[in-house]
Length: 398
Image (cartoon, rainbow, N blue to C red; front, side):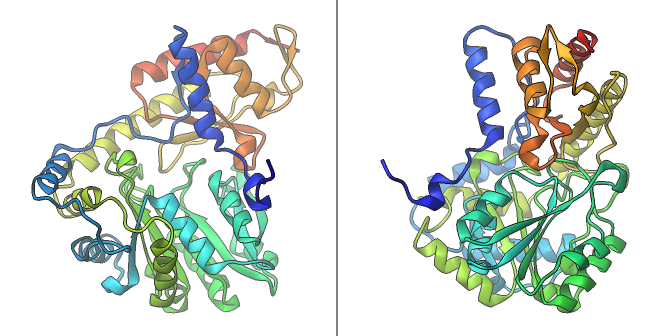
């Protein structure tokens, strides 16, 4: 069978593949501890579920406007005003089938053949694949733990060419957990606005920040940068609503309308019931969001402490999200039971088959020195899983 080139060139999601392999092992009776999934292990708060049930009972199960119901757009407008100091009108808002869908619509609306998209590495795995589908070229901006896994304004300035169309910003970051400060963002915003480059700001982990770190939206800095920014958010991570598939974006009316046109002819509206549940998520009590954030911080502290005690590994303290990006390059060139360790993929394979823990290789995020571990799991799993990791490392030989 001959498939379209743009589709056949895509890679499957490695995070979903790791999770699927771990689940197959579990079905075979093997006790695997999973650190791969980017999904809160908490249940959706009760008030949100009850709002969905109420919507069902009211018969709110029909088509809605493709870009979202007015009530949800109004709730999103209020959310941006309250949380981010951003002023938008409903016409500046689009609701989509998850933040991933929202990002894809934005990239497709802005980019085409011949354009360049600047992407800091490490990056979320789906960004390059989305860019590829537009025909644009991904230009990677490498970062390291030493610089906080953050792109500097000077690095960004040097990378911009006449072909540069878009810069993708993700703070807090998947996979590193790092965050850009307001000072960082002002410097980056000045460079982007001066060059007329669009910014896509992925803020899906906005409410999961630790140690007093405060999330700042680059669009809130005003001026020219707000006019050139598409802010993306959603309810999957903060409200434990991954399966509800609701994401949203705010930006200039013309871009939002183009995204809506795409949605008209692809998915149409997001699920009506999920939209009504999201109205409650945004308008209702936020106690459960804070409870989850506090628990994630405890898990982060426990995971970092245990990882830091394992020889050959190096890990920083994530400021947000729920991932540790662990440098395992100290194991490269060594062997486990005679099997050579040559990169993050080999570490991942050996950890799954020999230690029975599932992590995600850093190579799929653009950094082969590291692996990603999610602490969106219980403290019991973290303790047992990292004991297995430590036992694995003890058996590694030169």
